Length: 128
Image 1 (cartoon, rainbow, N blue to C red):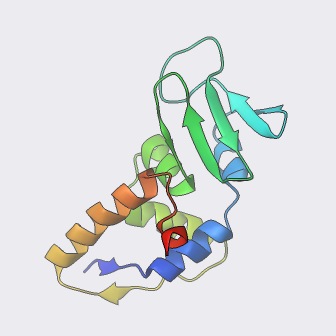
Image 2 (spheres, rainbow, N blue to C red):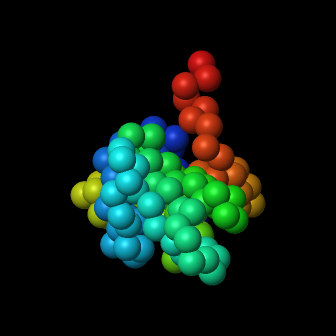
């Protein structure tokens, strides 16, 4: 049965993940000042409009609007579910994935909420 992922674990996974490492292993990035650029992997283009900001751990395509963090990138590029992306990044960071068993309906709802959270560039923990 799928479980809920504690927000603290998601935060730790993201803290230990370098988005440049994740994306550059799939897309050829070129250093452009303090950022990195490439042709977007999510649409056809000849002029690079895809930017990765290491400082903010965020990517954005000015052509198609794709944007997010390492979780969102893996979900879109590798076609992973939210939980699969977290498991991949946790393993990559040497973290053990904590599974808390919940009812399937609650888990599906949490998966949708977490997916929306990962695709939103706002860090909600900074709003407190």
